[in-house]
Image (cartoon, rainbow, N blue to C red):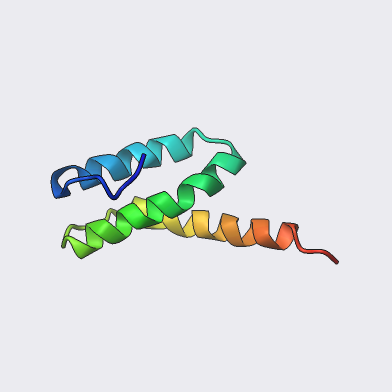
Length: 76
């Protein structure tokens, strides 16, 4: 799913769909969906729509997972 092709009316619906996909996804898929989900939330904010707290929390958790994954792959 690409967020760029969405209209203002279905931005929240797309974010909710992504939220459900993330909830049922494995770790690798969650990392892949993170930038799309973050972008969807940015578009909601830019459109003046309210971003639900649960989505903000999920976005923060996904960002933490991305950072953690980067450290897991660092050579020691």
